[in-house]
Image (cartoon, rainbow, N blue to C red; front, top):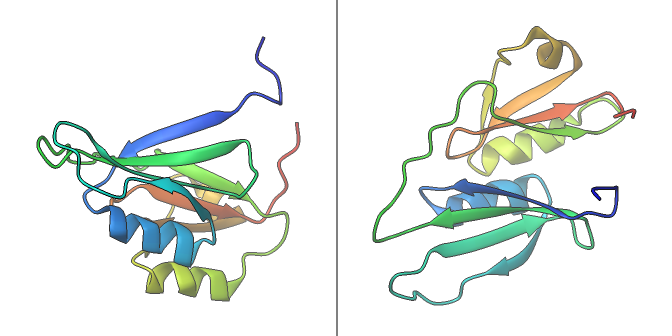
Length: 133
């Protein structure tokens, strides 16, 4: 049975794990939960980021032997519901950490948030609304 205690992992390829770490850790404020510390031939390099103690994390991967080029679309979104106006300093930290402020494809996200593309082009939406279930 899937319920609110189930843990979630979202995996994405990355061109540059160090750049992804700067964006998600230094910019957004997530924690490094785990990373590979040495190159193991035939295995992927990994970076796992998420909220400390949270029930989800991003697993960013890079296969140096057979790299996969990230191919995000304008609707590949990671939405964070802040429940308050988006802090300008947070957006500045994200752009200083390798992100690019972009116009949202969906006008809803433009009205209720700020969209920033990560170094691989995937979009992070900082939404001023609350998530209600």
